[in-house]
Length: 398
Image 1 (spheres, helix red, strand yellow):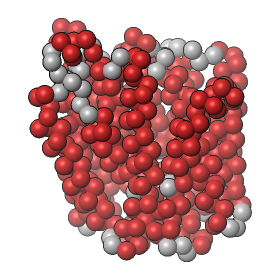
Image 2: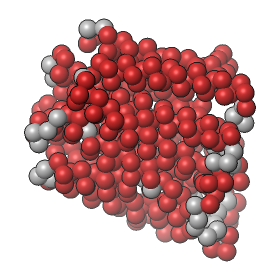
Image 3: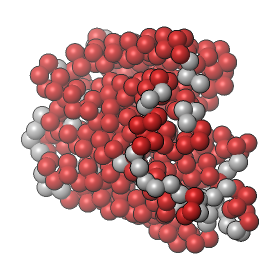
Image 4: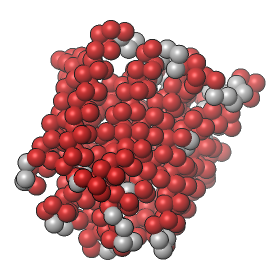
């Protein structure tokens, strides 16, 4: 439903603060595992690499179900999908606190990731439906600030609970808060615009648009790029917390706060994005961003000083957002007539890459150690940025 239709119907879009609260919980739930991985591995008496199956079990279904929720939101209403998914996510997250073994925890994280997939991408489409173009950038910026905050605080809260309370309790708290947000959405839904198109305008669900999109060289470049980015960056970063614990025996609360530096890097980017774009351009953002991530991974692996991790984490986060935001912007222009399809495919590959990367790097950590894992991730990201810059020169992205 267009903004004009929304106003004509006498309904207003849902509060960005409420939608941001839902996004905060989803992102915090993803990042809370980083400082807790070692604790969970010890409790269930498995290796860190084996325990990382709970990371893949969450991110892979999160990526897979992106392809389902976008068309579903168009069909029955985006706000209905968001609220239903958040309710199921809340119940699944709270239930994680009571799992007696790694197998059941893995299964529940799979289900939780499956439901979480229906929240953030569908919300971005909802914002597009309910805010005119001249207001949309500010609306999305306000919404994304909640994501960055969740990324910053998720690791910190995980460290605090892991050190002083229990890793189980953080999931219970997240579940209860998420359920509260879902209830507020349910109660207010009848007064809010759902932003979906009339039934006669809704296309029959099909995966054909995704395959058609991949016939475009530019689309293939962006999709392959974000898959490798998720595989290397988040696949390797998943083990940084365990590395800090094993190598330096740091308290979990300190590890949580240190991992939050990644989110601070994203916050710095959001404040400096206009200046960075004007000075570097899109090629520069991808090239410099990849270089910063590479340097950070190599320095973490080779420099035997945990104090350096604090600035390195911030630099890595800054580099990631420089590269990722450029790819994400390009994804919104791949199919102007079907942005939901393009963004869903983009998010799908990011999280599938992250899930597979965590599993692959887990085997590297268990068999060869942390240092080869980080070196490989850093070099691969540098090569990716070089390839993306060359592709930008050759075919362009817009």
